[in-house]
Length: 276
Ligand code: GLU
Image 1 (cartoon, rainbow, N blue to C red):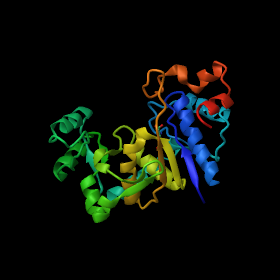
Image 2: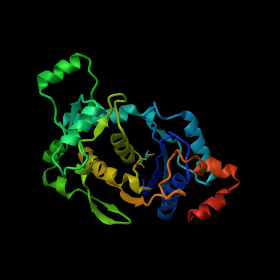
Image 3: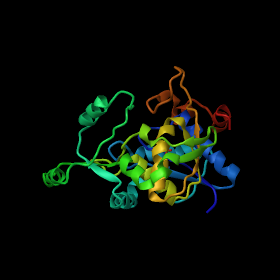
Image 4: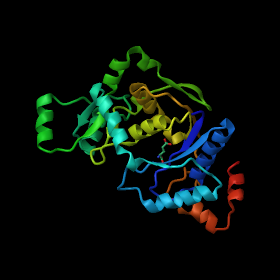
């Protein structure tokens, strides 16, 4: 299908200047490559996402002058795809059920030997205990087992890498994120899995996104290898800072695209300010 980039916002708030920069960067890359530009709505967490924010972001992006491929993929409408991928990982023995509460996980991380970072590493329960807890109706998440992934991939595990346009060849470091949750207790799926499945299904070749997701790429690179999916080229761009020199967040209301519009800024002015 040729080159393709994407912008994949979660509709949990209004888009701000930083999202505008990210969307324009991905869009520009698609144009440079003569490829497709895909918009994806990452709304699997229905407790935090609102349709009104989806409507607002469609409006904002059109105002900015972007256009995208139709139909737009809305993650909450494709849960079967993510469950299918989880099933494949389960059949390969690469995931395990985790019944722990947030506090138990935090305590385990705190007890880990010094120097192991902030990542959780666990193991499946013994079969009898697991069966008893399932039968008792206890909720559980599915976690990726880095130990199992390493055993499955062998030497290739240590050689996993990806290209970042700004950094060159980067060795993936999935251990920095640990045994991540691939299916949340409450949702049955989680971010890393949905993103990797969709980037594969939508044949995304170039991912342009903020450097806050740089660490996530290590885990996503591993999931690509485990699911037999190609690895896109990445560009993790620096984050835009607010007036207080902190990174912009959805709570910085004065910087939302809607607000900037209301203050009289034109899309052309904003694009110029952002360097487009
Ligand atoms: N949905 C994610 C977010 O809004 C971005 C996912 C991605 O670019 O991979 O933070």
